[in-house]
Image (cartoon, rainbow, N blue to C red; front, top):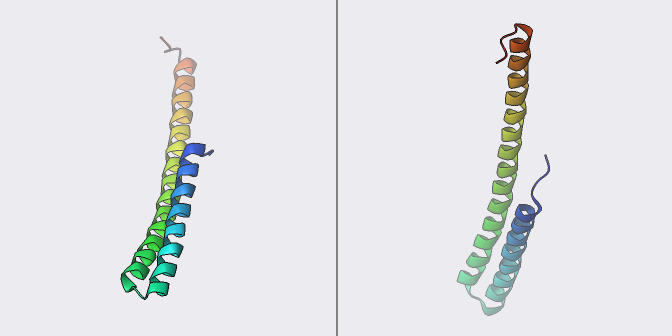
Length: 90
């Protein structure tokens, strides 16, 4: 299933932004000996990983919905064929 380009771009931007923030916060925290900044950078890394997992779950859910639509369409077609076969088509 083809994914929307806008959603993919947004997820990529979010991960990139969070990772950039993480690198800069950790670097500044280590340079200035401030543990809170390092922890903030670690939180940004965890958030970036969470975005990746949520995006994968979202793609999986969309694929599942697409499969369900195809199955329902096939079932509707088979019901139409059955009605045509028995001349019950209105």
